[in-house]
Length: 224
Image (cartoon, rainbow, N blue to C red; front, side, top):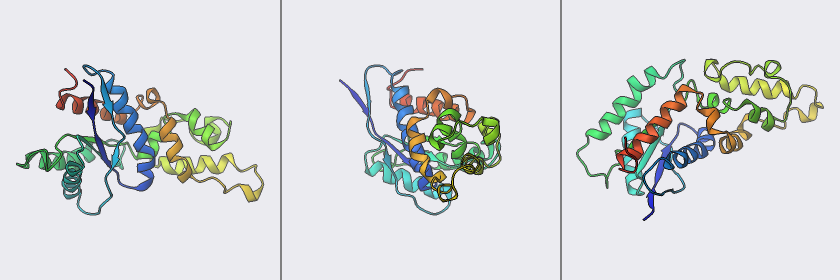
């Protein structure tokens, strides 16, 4: 009998959503091959963005997820720092502990939670496959010329680095064409095409992948 897993995810913004949806889907599909027996990963479900304190938001998302039959809920938050330590210590861990301490059944609140915490922000993950990034920008200039030569998670503002790379790549185009590509157009295709083995070079993605394996273990789909 084929097992199924239904995944929900909540992100900080619409652009994060466009990039992360496919990354989350493909990561779960990849880890599913490690499971006992065949596992079907259904299309991930986006939970509508809300506003409020992080702990309250996670609880709200977990309740909404349960109503949809979600079995694993992924929660995204940017680290906004050179490490994810503060994000886990002051946001993720307290919020997850709060949900798991609620004395209600999993039919009313989803307690199988996975954190997605890029360092420093989602755009660093977009830079993991620089060949793909340059292909989507439409340039064959060197990483050095575009300002992409450093490790993705070492940049203070990876979003601005990508914006600058787009600008640099288009300096030789006619003026009327220089602004016909924006970073907003890159999130979806890069999220769909980025190779997981490139993402696996990033410590923050490695942590997400380990959490994905733990989620399968919680479902008894994967052994230690």
